[in-house]
Length: 370
Image (cartoon, rainbow, N blue to C red; front, side, top):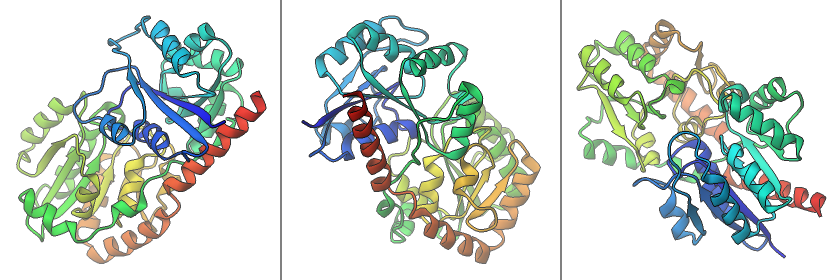
């Protein structure tokens, strides 16, 4: 009998945890696994639901309201009764809903992936629910060594497994897209484009990146900063760009569905996060052959080797970020060298490795329960 796996996540929006969950739902070996997806919030217009529908993965969305929503417990319990999964795979903060719902249905095997530093992934209430779930047998997976260490600091023991995220490597290196994407979006072929694919939220600190760009490259009219993503700081970020006189050189792209093309058209990737898990955007940039400038937080130093595949900077240090961006913008040979090394290292970040590791874990955990 195939192992039935349900991926449960908060939203189907285009974020890292969502990409991992929906990739597993689509890519686990169909001869061994039967998958489905449940999301607490209804999908937005640019969500992953289309990809799931195309792959014929059953999807249920539960109409969650903002804040604590007790309606999720009976709705999740109903979904679990309907689908009768062998493995319930959870992401981000959803354990506060899934663990009680699973107890309403009966004993179920829960695997929870920790996508961010454990003390920041959920609030105090969420950590309480997580502890209860882990003490009841839920299996924890960390996405990097640093996330595993943060899990140990918060919960007092090692996670069951460390499984790095993976990406579709073949999608991210197509030099022929460079000229086409630039022409379609109004950029000159000799412009220097710095891409950042990240939510415009406090965790990613886009305001610091905007200030660093202004300080380091504000006087160079051929340099542009491309911000792909939306979030709670978008309005403030737009105001800051205008106040700094960079409204025509800082470009807010919104939710981007052609990330491979955007990266192929860019010269450099930047991420100014205050904390991180193991960001897929960094992996994607490396796979596209881009040098990466990123804050040395969370699992980022496990991806980016300083002065080999990119440059690491202390989080929040705008002056240092400005200095690094300016230096790389003026040194095409160094960008080329770092980008080649980044692409070579990116072969480690394959979807196949990730799905294989989760598949083996799911079957092992199911066998233990049986």
